[in-house]
Every structure is written in C-alpha cells, then in structure tokens.
Image 1 (cartoon, protein in one colour):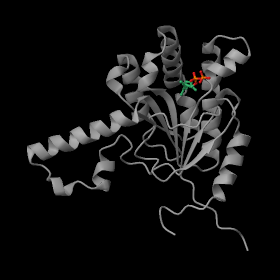
Image 2 (cartoon, helix red, strand yellow; image 1 turned 120 degrees about the vertical axis):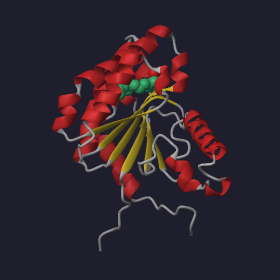
Image 3 (cartoon, rainbow, N blue to C red; image 1 turned 90 degrees about the vertical axis):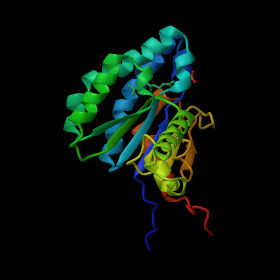
Image 4 (cartoon, helix red, strand yellow; image 1 turned 180 degrees about the vertical axis):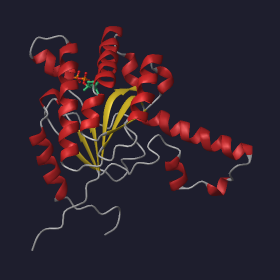
Length: 236
Ligand code: FPP
C-alpha cells in the first residue's frame, strides 16, 4: 500500500547565510549575495519543474534597510538585475512573478520594473514566484488592519464582517494559499518577521546549509521529509 503524501502547493524560504558563506572564503559579503542570487534562479526553476505552485522567497526584509549602505546597494543592485534580465527565462519556464512588501520604500525604477514584470508574466500558468522585497510581516498585518478600519469608517463594512477570511484578503498574499512548508537555511531557527500570519500551520524545516550552497537535491530531501510529516491543524 502506498503511503499517503501531504499535498505541497506552496513553499516559502528564508534564504539565510550569504554573509557567512562569503566570510568562510575570505570574500566580501557582496560575493555571498551574488552567489545567493544565482541559487535563487536555480531553485526557482527546479521548484517549478517539480510542480510547486507557489514559491515565496524572502529577498529583503524591512529590517534589512538598517544594514550598511553599501550592502543595501548591493542587494538592491542584484534585485534590479534579476528583475530586469530574467524575463525571457521566466517566460520560457511559464513562471509568474509576484512581489510582496513595502513598495514605497523602493527606488522608483525598481517599483516600475516590478509592475512591468508582474504584468508581463500575468498570463503564465506555471509556478508563481513570489519575491518578498522590503517585506515585514508586522507591517503587512498593520496595513491590513488600517485598510479594514478605513472601510469600516467609510461605512463600506461593519465590524461583524471582519473574520479570518476577510483579514487574509487584506494581506499582500490575498490570492495565494498559505505556505505548506517554510524552510530557513544557515542553521538559524527564527521566523524573522516573515509571513507571520500565513505560516500559522506551515511545517517548519531548518537546514544548516548556507543559502549559496543550497541545492535542488536538498530541496528534494526536504520535500520528502515534508511528505511524511503528520499535519493535524489542531485536530487529533
Ligand atoms: C541573508 O543572508 C540573505 C539576505 C539578507 C538577502 C537574500 C538575498 C539574496 C539571496 C540575493 C538576491 C535575491 C534575488 C531574488 C535576486 P545574510 O546576509 O543575513 O547572511 P549571514 O546571516 O550569514 O550574514
């Protein structure tokens, strides 16, 4: 009899360890981020090949703005490059791009490029690659609360309309299912303000691999492990 596997639609990843990867090689931290960006491309393609419907990657947090300016510039440069140059690759692989986060904090050209890429890949029917850029879970929840308060104040909604579904619909991830699996690399075991609302029932997986060393093979091992976990959602 074959074992029943958990269904896996949405994987979220906290890509941690770029700095340590570079430090171990006596390289500047920027080299770790650059290698990390290459791994993003590979893992996105491999996840898509495996039929994953949504892959959400934590590329830059609201707290990352507090890093030294040259490191912020490096990360923004890599994101800019990724958003500008990977269109044909995404089209070829039928991948749809989504970006979640505080767009008002990003440079105008990046905001414009995000809007273009989201629009140009909108019809793609393969995996949704959701990049969390300038993203903070608490900001997202506060923004949702503000939107609801404004609607109630205007009289478009009453307090009794507010429930879990409605609240979820006010988040950046409104039309996405919650992550089934959350992976964090580099051995740290924290959520770090990532998808706080959405990971309520996600299975957590902490890998000691530094993100630039992360491979499709390890992804497969984690998916295999996920398949054998018992998901109860609070039930017995
Ligand atoms: C954590 O490593 C990683 C980040 C803060 C950014 C993640 C960014 C990338 C993988 C590259 C750009 C992304 C795209 C989508 C092109 P860290 O710097 O905190 O590492 P450390 O904990 O070892 O110092």
